[in-house]
Image (tube, one colour):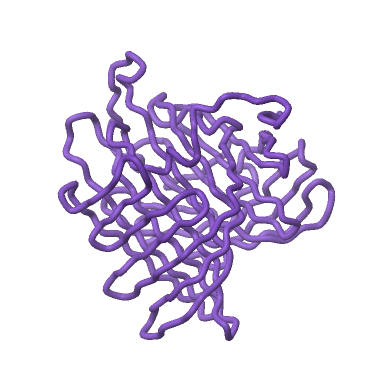
Length: 337
């Protein structure tokens, strides 16, 4: 499906600039910055700064997560940490993007974003510049998600960034490519529906999802979702064309090709190798985690945030690339459909 070209103007619920700001009336807010960078000497790092408002029913005190990952690719060292904050510890603006927690901060606009994290074991300060290209997931930026709640999600892509990384006792000037993701959930009562609280955590239910930011060496980037929630499986990719139109295409369910499973310290059984098949785009992409051990341990929401390499074909031509894969939910058993 191709949608939203300049000749066919479809009004979006999402405004990429306006909706960067914190939304206090929503069910959750997520701010997600990725940097794939290197030093002047050629050492490579993957960095993730994630600020997440924990989903909770209306009236329940808010909790926020500050998450920081660093992967030293050359040394194979992956370090991740997650700190829980109360609402009183968090500062935010509702008319522009500004979210400050004791251990991290994200601010800026659609073209310039600053992201920083300061943990006991490392810190980073990043300046990211973006051309303004946006992937509105699903073509409009809104799709059904947990508990039949619409979610808004879009990606600001093809960014460049630079900054300073302190890791393992060393300080590095770094530069490279960046990606920024913004997401939130609406509340049930916005649509006249009664709230349906989840019965336990994701790990206690048969629900999960996978997200990837497929970044190819031919310049194409795609957002991929593979979601199994409440007995329904949905798998698709969204791609923005140079003319700002969007291509939305089905993906063969990831469970059909997942392999090289890893049992994590949190007891999760994560796949670390996939064959992504997108028939409409003549694509068959082999995605493999560079290091299996890339879990973010958490008392609230264990997850996998792993850097991967890509090889294969896209639109019938050979490509290579990389992506970050996120896996959240119950990954304790086989996934075959």
